[in-house]
Length: 155
Image (cartoon, rainbow, N blue to C red; front, side, top):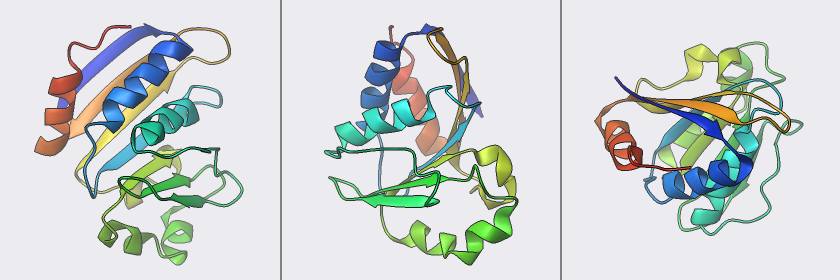
């Protein structure tokens, strides 16, 4: 497992990082977001979606998943209202892994048993107008390659 921690991220730098990340995604990529309300999960997702040619990203809190078409499909999940993995699997979560898109899931702390072994974890701290801290953890070689490419990211 490889880790990269970025400190003092402004909203603009979070967006730039989201674009840089989105350009490195691949079919089947899984992004697991962790962090409190207002930490920037949807901001990052919106920016990486833009790099895939997708506009109109909003938090899917009330629908669990929103599907978007772009250069790669994006399946944006929000597990905030789920009490466990069973609720996620009941809506056909397994099927999304075979559709060749990117899965970006917010509130992964609520469904840890649903996360694939290989993934990129994004742990966000901070909220409101304050700058954010982001710790990225690569679980698997493909995600380590992404972190290596982001190593020189400057705010």
